[in-house]
Amino acid sequence: QTVRGSVEYAMHSQQHMAEMRNQVTSPGGTSAEAIYHLEKGGLRTVIADGVWAAYRRSQSLGGESKSG
Image (cartoon, rainbow, N blue to C red; front, side, top):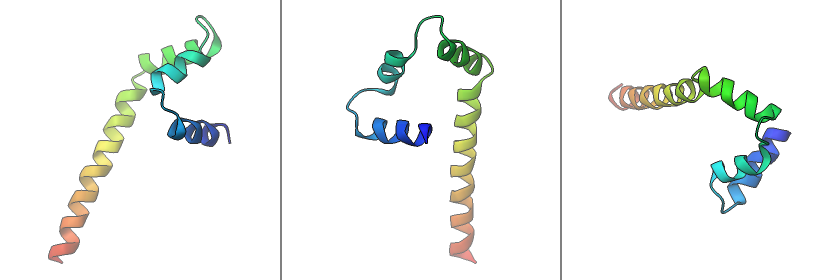
């Protein structure tokens, strides 16, 4: 529910996601520590790679259904 509420809030906000994150992330706090380790571990890259792979696969499958 927390994630769902956050997504809904972000969808209706005029603020950039980074601005919203900065408003709730205390320097040296638990969220800042978690974000640091997620970034250090490459989470952003892994998610981006996964989304890109899914897009390419959907394009491939779309092409197969048209010719099949």
